[in-house]
Image (cartoon, rainbow, N blue to C red; front, side, top):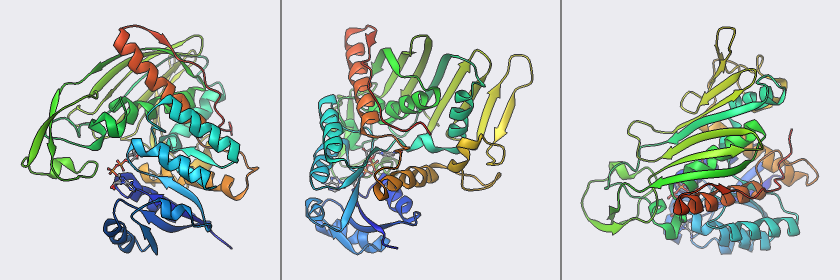
Length: 390
Ligand SMILES: NC(=O)c1ccc[n+]([C@@H]2O[C@H](COP(=O)([O-])OP(=O)(O)OC[C@H]3O[C@@H](n4cnc5c(N)ncnc54)[C@H](O)[C@@H]3O)[C@@H](O)[C@H]2O)c1
């Protein structure tokens, strides 16, 4: 069998997870990686056993053999890299947030459509097995009509003013930091499981550290807390540490959630709670194999992931039997598997978030900023997203 050749751009925290995820697929070969600077690119390629490396990603776009690329670089590079890749005829998996503005995201959607190329916004967190089970029991009407949703996405790795990452600077990460980074994942998941789009919101943002101590050398995501607090320079901060958001979903449902990178002890604390007219469900990323099911007139349950007990349509998202955990890494395998199915067969349904989903998230980001500036509720324009329902 001839494998689909792919390349990964950016080999930091998430680039490494993409490398592993790609290698768990049977029909894809990781043919090349791109990293900033020839030496760093070569070193990483040698470490993970990839034959080709490039200090400049554009050199890989000339290679006709490479059919797809994964963009795992800081946010400001998503748009130029995706545009160049699509123009060169490559299918694209792009990390979230899709871009740094609605205009960029719109152009990406248009270009991918015009070129008929597979395009994925990597909202991988949808693909935890129990999140898929929740989605399917909601679709089957087991929760009734959705009334309200609640939750948070909280981390602690930017708690101190000595913590630094490219995300803090709006030039690299975009005008919203914690909302762009974590809020987009939370919104994608809640809309995916409820089947409702966010139609209006009211947001309050806070930057606790008005200045931070930036290290003089480059550092990788999450590496900050292992660095010694020396050789820093004090710089002003123009992105938020925390946001609280009230939302309306569809015509009737209401909700509220927070996003934070300064919540001590919360490592990757994404949680969602969905309350319907018949019952409710709650899921938390730090205990991914469990789903809490709430009942008004009978005892509540905690369901443990077990494909034989899961809704039939959710079973293909769990590869292992009950009692064998499936976590963060596995969500990448699941989304990539579905993406490459559509690379192989362009008529196959796209069962993954596409650039249009990323565009909707960018519209939400824009409205979060507008709402917090105006201290007011704002409407969110609807977006026709293209992910297949099954
Ligand atoms: N889906 C998820 O669960 C998830 C998790 C983490 C990060 N992300 C997203 O992934 C992206 C990367 O985040 P990260 O945490 O891995 O950052 P990181 O800083 O750890 O890694 C980014 C890498 O990109 C490289 N890079 C910068 N410019 C480059 C260029 N011109 N060519 C090639 N490589 C270049 C950097 O040297 C670095 O190695 C962000 O958009 C982030 O939002 C997604």
